Every structure is written in structure tokens, then in C-alpha cells.
Length: 138
Image (cartoon, rainbow, N blue to C red; front, side, top):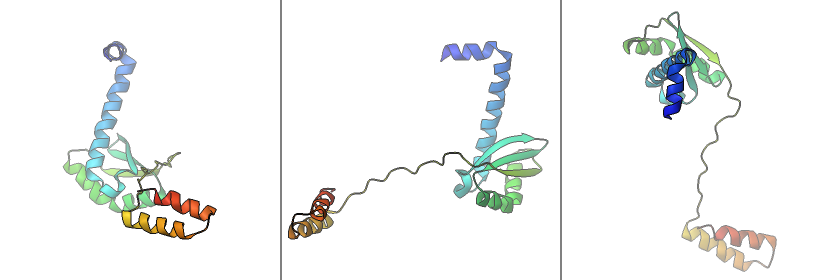
């Protein structure tokens, strides 16, 4: 890690890039502090130029909601010390939507017992085998 920092310090072009990345990170943190929780995961602050903040929304519904909330968001940004007079919202669809985390599904002991009892009452079949496999998921 130390070698990378040395490389960045020695190259003026990389220093400019690091400075810009730091500005964007700070702007995103400010944006995250004023945008409602429900919209936070679907928006990204893109930049601040000529007192206009540009926000990317993942879809049109989020963009419409942001446009409705623009006056209050603008006021909250100004309260936080950001010199901004307008908000520009652009739709930028994500190429791969984030996958929700897999949930572990388990049967209760009562449900597993009921399925096992039903499986025992059936003749040998694919249904019986499937019910026995399902009953073991406790």
C-alpha cells in the first residue's frame, strides 16, 4: 500500500485524480445525509459544477420522486454548507441490478413432522421422496 501512495504522490496527474475522487466521495456523503433512506440506495451524486449538483437515479420512478423532493433537498444541502442553487436529476440505469441477499428458509419442527407424516402415508413415489427431502430441512 505504501508503494501505491508513493506513486500517487509523485505523479501530478494522479494527484488531480485523487483530489477529484475525494471531492466526489465527500459530495456523495453529503448527498446520503440529505436524501431519504428509501431513495439512498438508488441515487448517486455525480458532481457539483456551477452551483448545480447532478444526481444519477437508477430508474425513472426514483428520478420523479427526486424532482418532487428537489426544493427540500436543495434547502437541506444549503443548510449543510453546500453552495448549490439547483439539482439536476439524470436517469442512469444500472447494467446489473444488485441481487438481494439469499435468505435461509427453515421449517419449524411441527411443519417438518406434518410433512414427514404425510410422506409416510403415501406410496413410494416422486411426491413422497420430495416431501421427505423437504421435511429434512429443519
